[in-house]
Image (cartoon, rainbow, N blue to C red; front, side, top):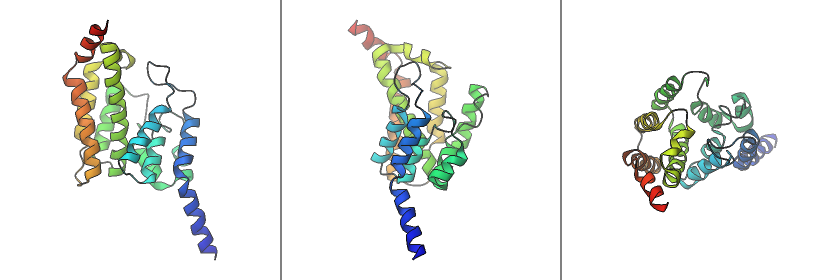
Length: 209
């Protein structure tokens, strides 16, 4: 009887995993906004969760997507993620987290690129969804304000181009997975569109004016 009760308690806890992740992420990011905007930061991890859900990911992967920035930017301890959401979620979040924000931008990004090459498919799913939402946001804002969008970032367009194109290499998966390959191709298409047609957004912006 005790074993049955424990099993039901675990199942119940897993059943509300995404709801609890939403609450934890909303609390961790409650005072943050997206770079160069007044848009609440929480819209980003929520969007990542939606992308992962549409890709058919397990709830642990979706929860990790929603929580992926809580350790790096929300000052939440990884041990707390593990305690509240389990080892699988914590492992994904850990693989998505830059270890030291005080290091130079280039060193941090190179560390990320090296880590992702050896990352689990779960972690690659989350990073792919994360970067897909980011590059879609950049593309949308490029159409709206042109090259001014790059002023939001610590590094300009060329450095961002290096990083995103390098990410495409690091995010390749050796495992055959149709859902992941579809998500990866969407990211690749968006990256190529943003960085191979640098003046398209500016031209459209000038034409509207």
